Amino acid sequence: MTPANPTLSNEPQAPHAESDELLPEIFRQTVEHAPIAISITDLKANILYANRAFRTITGYGSEEVLGKNESILSNGTTPRLVYQALWGRLAQKKPWSGVLVNRRKDKTLYLAELTVAPVLNEAGETIYYLGMHRDTSELHELEQRVNNQRLMIEAVVNAAPAAMVVLDRQHRVMLSNPSFCRLARDLVEDGSSESLVALLRENLAAPFETLENQGSAFSGKEISFDLGGRSPRWLSCHGRAIHIENEQAHVFFAPTEERYLLLTINDISELRQKQQDSRLNALKALMAEEELLEGMRETFNAAIHRLQGPVNLISAAMRMLERRLGDKAGNDPVLSAMREASTAGMEALENLSGSIPVRMAESKMPVNLNQLIREVITLCTDQLLAQGIVVDWQPALRLPWVMGGESSLRSMIKHLVDNAIESMSQNQVSRRELFISTRVENHLVRMEITDSGPGIPPDLVLKVFEPFFSTKPPHRVGRGMGLPVVQEIVAKHAGMVHVDTDYREGCRIVVELPFSAST
Image (tube, rainbow, N blue to C red; front, top):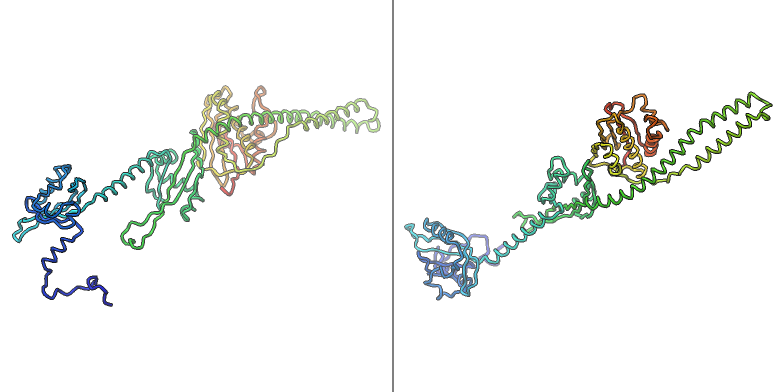
């Protein structure tokens, strides 16, 4: 098919019928109408020719520039070194390219992207200089504006307290700000940004997957990390997709997009800590009330336990005496007194049982065991300091939720910590250390509370879970209900509690609880 316009054909054109070469007039017209400013000067830079684009850019007419030196375009602000480099290259018969600040006829300034090349004769001698330049002021302004905006954005991002990171589809870190790097040093062992990204992806599995696969943004997803002796870190995370066009040349006419992921993390630990402090103050009052009720229950149960023995003895003795007296039992005054004592004892037991404060039913909910331990440690701070006990708190960085009663689980931990403090408060204990740890093991949440006290003899490790049994000396406070209560609470949560008999440097209590399958 023959093209409609032969001059646009890709086929080679036949030479002109009159000559195998283009005519000089064609060259002149080509230069005259070229869209770039072209001038020809002598060896002293006096202008011999200037094309139409030269006149348009500079504002000078032909009669105003012919014979004039190129210096009429100089504004005097271009450094001398630039001109020295220009003339140095021309002296070597080589072209020079660079940027000059030029001045138009109307005194306005513009940036000239200039190329000057020597024109050589057949002997290789320079006879003219060919200058070509174009006005790049708008391009420079645009580039500078983009660069300034980039610098301002970088300054804002780098100074922002929020941690920011940009990831590619392979989760590689493409960009991160100093706040993100600081957060990485605080939260992961190796302090690398890549490890922190992996940790965030693990804790934000569902929203991160939706963001990655569908580009759906998420906002305000809160996660927390327990850091042992240091305050926990609470993070509010936001994610969104960034769509950027492919920069490669082969997709110029069929542009494609690449998706990057932007994560923004706000540290809300201080806010959560203030809320936690307020909550702890309320919790202190609540636990004080619960401990008072628990003490009353223990007192009543202890009284019932102690009264039950004599009442049972009276009942047994009464039955023996009835069998011995036979028909004469009805008139025996001793037996009548025993019957009255037995009846009074049973009534007393019933009255005591009816007076025991009732535990309120507690609904089950997802509970963070690390948070409860941290609360108990905070509540026991005064006791720990008074006894000179050093606490080593090593929580699992990521612990699944336990379904259970928050109040009862907290009470269970409080009993264990109180027992540990009590055991280390004895005078002969010089090293006073409390070690608490949590981890996931065998599909269970495992909590260990270890103290450096005298420990529990092997023959008593089972008896300590019996009601009203205590290893404390008679003069020490304690009704022997701490561990039985712990065992009762753990059993209600389908867990197990035992004394680690392999531990010889004190006492280690191990609690294992099933965690929620949804975490």
